[in-house]
Length: 231
Ligand code: E4P
Image 1: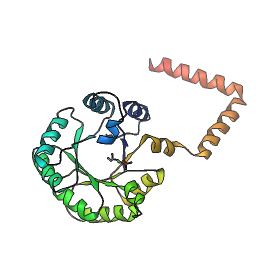
Image 2 (image 1 turned 90 degrees about the vertical axis):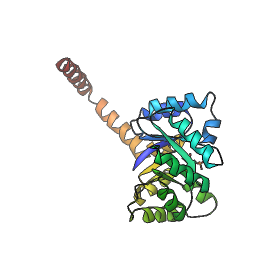
Image 3 (image 1 turned 45 degrees about the horizontal axis):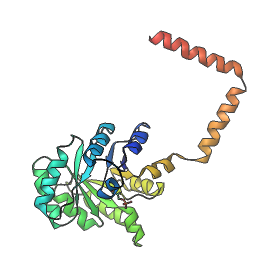
Image 4 (image 1 turned 30 degrees about the horizontal axis):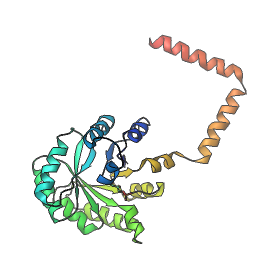
């Protein structure tokens, strides 16, 4: 499963991109509205930082407006994927945009039947919001499992994108269910880094190595001579 970052913050993308684990990014109107500056600049900067798809969302309520906004957003950068909210108009806009070569992330999908319609309209990604399902007492694992199960048997190319992740368990569940992508907030990516045994292990290796000072000198010399050999 590939990992995208779910954010409107250039600084957050910059930080996590440096870890080498990002395959893409998703934004939405709420995330961009929290940031200072021009949304177009923000989207272009995120696209430059991420070597993969970056979702930018349309806000029109009618399909004509969605298509116009989608085309304009796609023109911002080659990495832009047009994010279209699920609705009748969203499905029509998805069909129109994809028939002209634009890739679409259909968002706000909460059921397998919606996912089937999104896939049929040509969406590249079908975004199911786990956290928001859990928030209303619906088992997001069961819904996601049903979506993956419904899309896999057909000749459907749409990829299932797990969104609205609130904690690392959501990411693990999405991977185990066979989702192609999970989009993860920076805070949750930070939580995914942490394990007390990792920290304790690093501390112990350092202490044991430093107890043999001649080993430190040996490693320094090894690094120095390999640099000379490579230069
Ligand atoms: C997905 O692409 C959305 O941007 C996002 O995951 C929404 O998450 P939220 O429910 O935390 O707002």
